[in-house]
Amino acid sequence: MKIKYSFILIILVTVLISCSSKINRDIESKDLAKEISEKEKEIYNSDSLNIALANELIDMYLTYATDNPDENLSPEYLFKAAEISMNINKAKNAVDYLSKIENNYKNYEKYVSSLFLKAFILENYLKDYENAKKYYSIIVENYPDHALAQDSEAALSFLGIDDMELIKIFEQAM
Image (cartoon, rainbow, N blue to C red; front, top):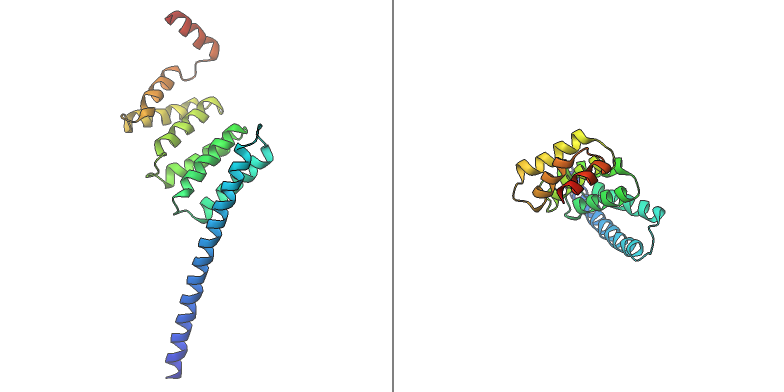
């Protein structure tokens, strides 16, 4: 009888501990989301991009997404981390964050936009035309009715052409 009560007590304590740790994680994630919102206001209200603040915000986005992979904000924060990374010349990191969206958040409302941004960064920042072509083609083939399908087709037609050649092409078209 004593063993039975001890066993029940152990189970109850385990359940209570697991519930309280989930509650603590929920509180921490809400606090972090609030901090992120405040940091975003600080960065976006500034006249110039503060690289240190941008890196802090990226770290906050990544912490949230890593700690809360099932939350709706996680892919959005990864997308924002990619945008900021691209703008502070951390294109490789941006591609990595977009790959996380590609692999883990196929139902994310900006999924196709994340594929397009990945292709754009591969093309324009990393000069990886082969992979850029792959991602533009995925959009054209798999999402032909999406608004970015037409942009992807245009990007494919000019992929790898340097600026001077593009100018000549546009001049000839006029």
